[in-house]
Amino acid sequence: MGFLYNIGIRGYGLGVITAGLLGSNKAIKWVEGRKNWREKLQATKWDKPIWIHASSLGEYEQAKPLIELIKSDRSLKSKQIIVTFFSPSGYEYCKDVDILDGIFYLPLDTRKNAKHFLDIVKPIISVFVKYDFWFNFLAELQVRKTPILYFSSNFRTNQMYFRKGFSWQKAIMQKIDYIYCINKESEKVLIENGFQNVGVCGDTRFDRVAQRASRVVPIPEIKKFKGADLLLILGSSWPIEEGILAEYIEHEFPDNLKIIIAPHDISEAHLEQIETEFPRGLIRYSNIKGKEIEHYKILLIDNIGMLANCYQYGDIAFVGGGFTNDLHNILEACAMENALIYGSKVSKYPEGDALYQEGGSFLLNNSQDFSKSINELLNDSSLLESMQKKSKLFVSKHIGASEKVFEKMKELL
Image 1 (cartoon, one colour):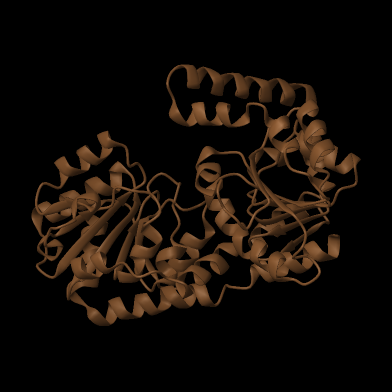
Image 2: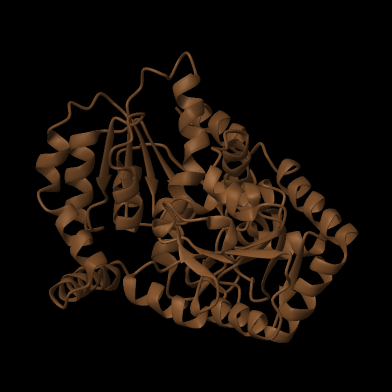
């Protein structure tokens, strides 16, 4: 299986290069960012750093509370921290972060790359966020007896690691020093598959969103846009959610409702498509200077990074991805005390079902469900307030995972 895995890894790398040649901007960044990676790493004098790997921006956000704990600890604050990313979205956003001693793309997971990377960096511990299992890196870390810690990992019984024919990967995973799971269901999956190096820490995203909520930055333009009306925020939306909302306001657009649309895809083509779907009273955020923004009904956020702060003004959040089992971050909206609405396909996102069970959200199967749910919230202030409070409580009662991860990390050092 190791032989087939290595062929697959090289095939993946070739596929990304091909996509870059065909014009994929993400693939181009993926390839360009990994050029001369050895020389880039060697430009820093490494002194047994703590290595944290995040697949993308979302995983890095989960690691930030842990990084702050490391930096505030008297015995560790002088330690270097190196962060690697697999995806361009994380690297591009974080490449200039001062709190870190180095930010790099993770080289393609070949045996040779793993050896060279670890020869240069020589980390005292490796910390992986969630579930980025790169088996050549893991195997080489284990040869060198470098402690490996995973946290906020989520497992399901049907994942490939637990199927026949994947014993090579499973054996490496069983040698990981510790895997902190997101919940007891994930821990049970591992225990049933012969793992002993496991526990439950929870989800460090709760810590991160609570942290961000306590440090929220006001946005005067958004406050002025909302005025005294209720504000619905369509966050990290895909075309299916945008279409549902467009259909709703075509038939009824309550006078006391304002809408913010913050799409996942902010390409010009997609922004123009949204403007076509929502022809009445819409303005882009980049065009509001000098305008009486309070007179508009819909504000289109055409940048990356504002959404989390926008939620402080929201009353209801319609979060994208729930119709394709790719639910985006609902916890940012929860921490800012929004009532939540999203599609019902949340099997990979336990927080989506848990919030629903606790009364903080509505699950949708179609546009009719959306109309029913939004009208209930708009017409029943008691229901809206109740769901908002349950949503915020959902976050506050689940914080603390980062402290557990931090203590385990120190234990493994």
